[in-house]
Image 1 (cartoon, one colour):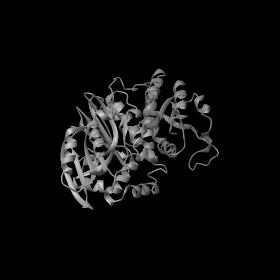
Image 2 (cartoon, helix red, strand yellow; image 1 turned 90 degrees about the horizontal axis):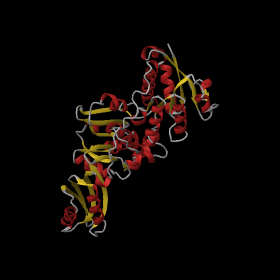
Image 3 (cartoon, one colour; image 1 turned 60 degrees about the vertical axis):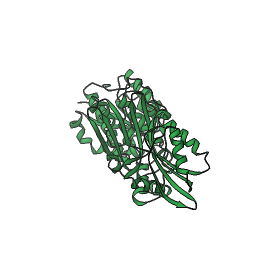
Image 4 (tube, one colour; image 1 turned 60 degrees about the horizontal axis):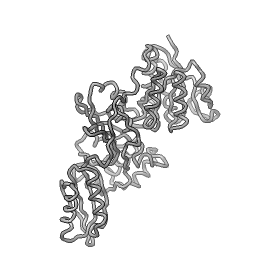
Length: 425
């Protein structure tokens, strides 16, 4: 019976959660993996800082103490950011240590390189917690659904924006008010840019697309658009159309390449993702054999994220115990091109303020027709001071054609403002 030792890099929210779960599960390990497991070291910036509930004797501020300790088999990186996490992981892999990480930034940009280093050194590198907190999705894509040809993966993978949009939908709040509440409750950071501009979700959908389609997709490939321009009025229109507005990460494997993007979207209220509210996350997968499957749960937080990390730790420990490490590494064996956003297709919701006079609607329809943008329906509800609010829902159109129409609209005096543009599922 082997006593497997691990080191944790970072003692923040997730690191503390991993420590708690390790202590809570200590007596179960012999039954779950066939050996005992213990935390040998925890890397922190300041080892003299008091950390409630953590044994201070485990703390170190010197990574080399972990790197050069041959008894440590697993390194758990929960520091976040690119550096020094990347350097630490590379060094640990080259020393033959297995890696578990929750670092979405790093895996979305450098994941392929790290997995190559892991393969060279016959090590595991697992990252379930990097995408959707407690929700199992990486392992299902790599293992449970490996017999499928997956054509689409779509999800709500940012709890902050989902909380904000839920408050705007259910309580009629405007964006700024809902964001303030999210910050007060701890769902949003003081600087919420990565969440509300779609960057966090973009990193996660890049990771999932790479695995789902077996072809490398990086964060730089992802078109991102946030929720800062969504208004209570847009949500009211969506409700009238029996739709909800969600920030979605969408990836499709088409005959002409991979489409991968993050943006707000109107989805039918009957769609399973429409009922995912507050800080919950969900991922919707379509495969040729499984058809549709959805994974839902807590997408962030101390213990939910630690749950995913612990699952990876246990998986690595089992591989060590049965001497089968490195079984499942990088699965990107294809080289499928990623399409430009201009070449993708979407339906659009467009809300504009126009002159309230005859001929305006005909002019709008003419511009759309001349740029190959079909119209599904037109709604005109409000008039005020010679201004009418016009809502146009398009058919599915090529993005660049829709952009051509927008460019023309912006030069037309009869169109006073284009208030909102939101894609429609």
